[in-house]
Image (cartoon, rainbow, N blue to C red; front, side, top):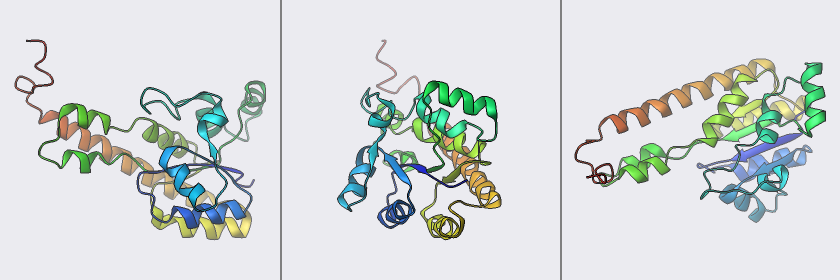
Length: 206
C-alpha cells in the first residue's frame, strides 16, 4: 500500500514547501485549505482545495472546513476491511493516507493579557484535533504528522517503499495524542481562570 493522497493544513507552515514538493514528486495528491494551500501554490506545488474535494464550501467564518464525511471517511476507513471498502465505494469516499496538521495557536493568543473570551474561543481548533485524532486512531493505515521535525523521516521511508512503517505510524500517533491532550489542558486551564461574574462578555445578560 502506498500513500496516494495527503491532507495538509497548518498553522506552523515551516518546511512545508520542501515536504509538499517531495511528496508531490512521489505521486501524492495534496489536499489543503486557506493559507496553507496558498503557500504551497506560491511554491509551484499542485494543490486541490478541500472544498473542491468534498463539493462543500468552507463556511461559518472558516469554522467548518474539514468536518465532512468525505474527509473523515477517507481517514478512518480500515483499508483491509471489505465492508469498509464497500461503503467507501458506495458513497464515493476516497482514502486519505497522510495527514499533516498542527493547531491554532491557542497558547499564543491567550498569552496576551488583553485576550478576551471571544478571542480565546475563536482560537480553539475543532477541525484540526478531529482530523488528528481520527488519523492517529487509524494509524494502521494513516500517517499523521504534527511536527515538522518528522518530515524528513517520513520522506525517507516513502522514498524507499512508498509508505511509512507501522512502527513509525504508531510513534507518530502517540505524538498526536500527547499534543491534543496538552492542547485541551491549556484550553481548560485558561477558561477556568475566567471570572464568570465579572467578565464583560459573559455579563451581557445583566
